[in-house]
Length: 58
Image 1: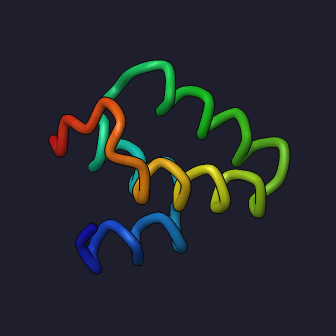
Image 2: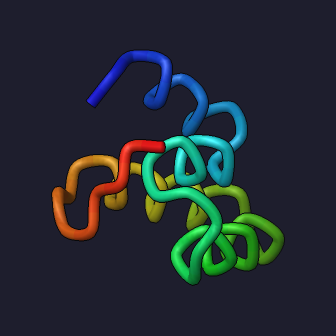
């Protein structure tokens, strides 16, 4: 998990998710969570970054 991805997830959560998995359902879910509230988007982004499941590392 790179520092760039962590910073991107803190500033703009969908960007961090995009850097980890690309454009997929997880990315769109993160956009929705970020629109509904910034904090849920950040929490989801950090969860995606620490999980190794389905890691594409775009």
